[in-house]
Image (tube, rainbow, N blue to C red):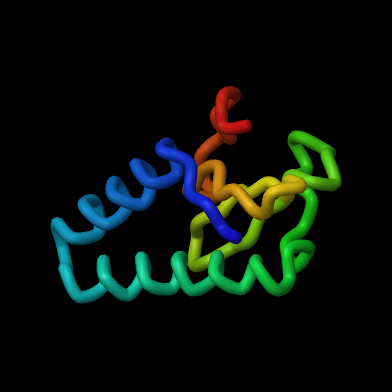
Length: 95
C-alpha cells in the first residue's frame, strides 16, 4: 500500500498552486503524473534510485519532470515522504 505523509501532501498542493498560477491545465497534468508514478510503487517498490544524500536502500526517489518524489520502503508498504524540485536542496527533515 502506498501512503502519503502530510508533508508530501502539502508539497503536492503547493506544486499544484504554484503551477496553477500560470495554467490550471498544466498544474493538473503535473500532479496527475506525480500521483501515477507513486501508484507504480506498490508493484515495483525498488523502481526508484537510492537517494544519494541519504544512502539508505529503503529511501528512494523517482523523477517526474523536474520533481524528486522521495519515498521509503517499510514493512507496511510505501510511504511518500516529500516532493522536492530538483534544483532545491533536500530538506533535512524530509526523512
